[in-house]
Image (cartoon, rainbow over all chains, first blue to last red):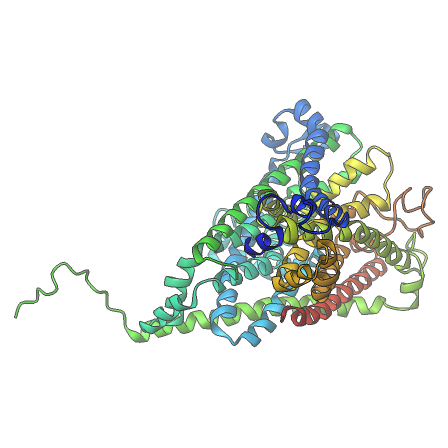
Length: 337
Length: 301
């Protein structure tokens, strides 16, 4: 909404609180400033909560930051029994599982968004879109369970033997490393499941962004005799590309911090860097989930909270980037979806 | 005779119409395949959970507390169901009024001001913060200083997740209310708060109920924030205080119990976990679909 309406309500000159209190203009209602203050306080609470969270994380991770120095982010092995708190394996596992997820989810989300915006009748698009959005409603733990009991055996018994029989199985990165355990519980499995968890988010934002492309621009393309794909590639995607980047960042942020499904599936290997996406590994979030309640040592708890702080900063960064790119597309197309 | 024509013009690349149409068709087919993959995955998950979970649903599942050892054959999820309801309800009591008023601030007072823009941006960012981090936060402020786990710590974590969702949803819905409604209320001489409470809320009622329900349902299925706040317990919650109470100790809840049981090596415990998963999926998807149907109605002004 624009600010024009607020001007009408506030009257000229000064904030509305002052205006309503001004004698002769309107009867003074004590309810008004009270309500306004209460609502503003609640609004500020939302913001303060985040800074509170950041401060609490920094405070509680300080013993690890000062006591362990850079050990947490530069050494590989996490082994509390020997006093080693290196989380490089977790950082690598987070990055790799997210990469696998994005490689699958981004193209899939884009073609689905194309279908929803350009190819089908809006009524059909609503039903299909709702089906995809429901993927976001399924709780993480259920993805984890279905993954563990259904996807893991499939990958272990069918997919890996097939893959290793093809030339693909000897490409570095796909070729099993020293820690290979059959590929069922692996970074790859976690990534595949993650892909479907972030798919609805990327699809929804891409769809909204593509809808913002002005109709006349697309019609001009069609008028020139372009096919649907040519309009999509040369007009819609060019117009909306910064929004698509925003959509990808939103999915990326989700995938990086996803906990339960990854904890079930990634294999929980804390002591070695993954040599292949089919090796077991760990991620920051799943390491915290699995180690936190068993952590007895103060420095271990602190190191885990430091990892939480790192994850927090990474996801906040991606969220801010996403907001930035989405704002840009709003400016370019001049409006909301 | 000369072939030199159109000096200065860029050479036009010849693209056969057949080829262009083939590419177009390929993309269209891929789009459909993509959509079907998404929907098939969704259907497959529901199918697997129903197939495996329905076996666990008997009277005992809804009336007995979680079994404490494998030898006892009887056992259900009743204590966990109660715990989840209580933890989620308290979270809702904290977050809904606060988030709601926060949304009112964004939509009615702050609007495009600098503070409101900052609050809106931060709320969007907080919505992307991983839920496990919120669990760590609740642990650090409520479990660590008090030296014990509690259901309340779990509620606070869930409330933290709900808060920005509530605020942003409320704002979006209030923005749908036409300004003429506000103006006519004010023109009648009603104070601002009465206009908001009486006119704007009434107009936006469906959407607001929808938003609140979706926010509740969303956190009811969360596991990560409860892992080290509410923890879990094989017992019933006994009142408010004391080691078995809501404020005093670990409280049984669905998601953490499902996590523990599904990871156990005992088939009967795994079956119970699937029963719990089925309960969650029925509640979450059922409410989502129900409320979305309402929402579509609420959106059409």
